[in-house]
Length: 338
Image 1 (cartoon, rainbow, N blue to C red):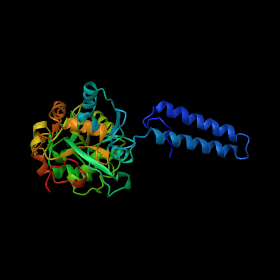
Image 2 (tube, one colour; image 1 turned 45 degrees about the horizontal axis):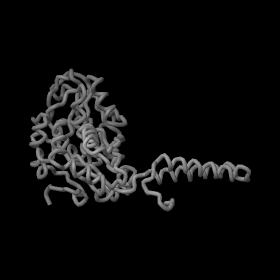
Image 3 (cartoon, rainbow, N blue to C red; image 1 turned 30 degrees about the vertical axis):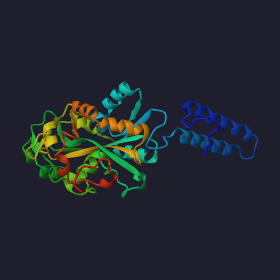
Image 4 (tube, rainbow, N blue to C red; image 1 turned 135 degrees about the horizontal axis):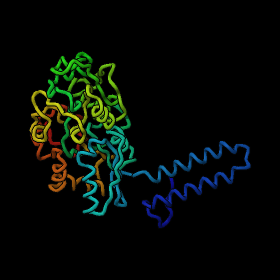
């Protein structure tokens, strides 16, 4: 582990750490350039220098020492509230929160490793699934919902959960089977089974987190391309989070008679509601805790509501209605059934 010189603060600037790492690399190269193992030594020294940089620049805990934070996570959570929350929080406190995407799983795992101060996720952490998600604590901050997207020209306005399940299993393959045109159904989904949408869809629609979708499903790398594909393809159908999908040129279908409006999501009349979490490595502390505490205040929750996302008070009845809670001992502010 790198030592800290006398009088040097542990949060010394990233630029200085980079300069020191580069200087170290040059020193290695100078000392070894005439040796018998020149190439191997240079490569090794480069690896060491990069490792030093990575170590020194990584966030060191669920708190932050210099007032600036970084957040990594799913685009749905970012669009639901995080982008606006970061902007308002910086205006009020002067503390910047840098945002980057990558998906729910990446957000959880970067928070777990300490590479991100905060991870944004539309699924719970799964320490039972992978060691990469060990040590995470979840703060529940809002509610989202999975929605069914189709092209605006599609005449179908509603489905039942059974019909939706049949479409994604490949048992229903033509729109005429659900009241639409005589056209083949094009199923679109994100790759993988542990991303935020895919994991929760399997849990809530199939009752099986390992369920497989129709073999001819078009699989794309993230929710953004999935939503865009539906915008462009008249016979397509896909799932996404309402916080993201409502900003696209798509039609959102009613499900089991409930429209995916904010009020219906808040009351549970629309069935596929789910919690949104912010993840931290261990219990939040320092500047991270300050931000999370602010987001849970009346002002922070009002900001979430103003983004047309259901906040905790608006979705108070959902805590007992949600049937898919997991690892509730890891949720810092859990309010559901014991």
